[in-house]
Length: 183
Image 1: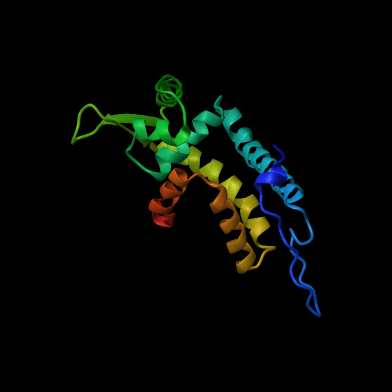
Image 2: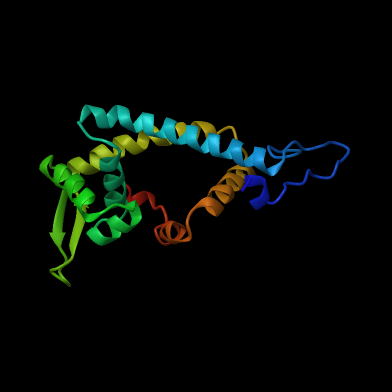
């Protein structure tokens, strides 16, 4: 099946006296989808490269970064929630968390309400590493967003939002960013 069969055609905007260019104006849906795919791919690589430089210094990889991110954003996140968010097995998560705990970056505690539930918390060292990783990535994002209007940033968020799985979007909306909670 051709991608053009499953994606609605993007119609060019009506011509005005002063046409406002839009990234998708005049493009067929297959071209627009492929361009979006490539842009997302290269943005992902750029963000990963920034983090990889720091992670490599600590002998860590991207799986470690993901665990640090979610444990930092949600102190006390359960092992089950991490497995679901990261879409990995208990074995894969255990290997990663054990390495982080061995390095003094993460600690697991049993829930006070249910001793069967393990919760993940960053140590001060883990918070510091996550802060370094996040700050470097946020610099790139801030530089890019400084060239966009508020409406363009909102449009970018809207485009990303409709591509995120509903269960992941539920996490985003129930875990709003708060400066005071960030490491």
